[in-house]
Image 1 (cartoon, rainbow, N blue to C red):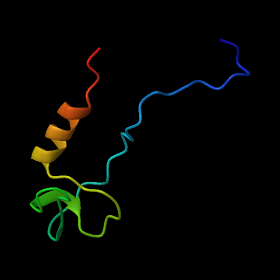
Image 2 (cartoon, one colour; image 1 turned 90 degrees about the horizontal axis):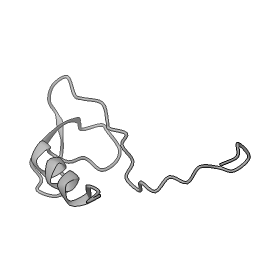
Image 3 (cartoon, one colour; image 1 turned 120 degrees about the horizontal axis):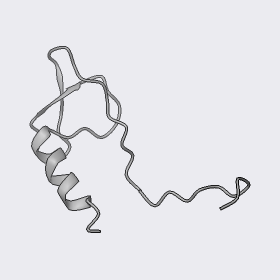
Length: 63
């Protein structure tokens, strides 16, 4: 592949994670509404550790 051609990224999941909260108030999980480990002020989709793990299992590459 030449340097002039952009690389194609097939991963559609953004791996960026919101910053961890130092303490309450915590953001709610968008799936189960349980508290997450992220600050309430974070703008975007937040998942609790259980839903985050389940989502990772669903979207993992099967190889």
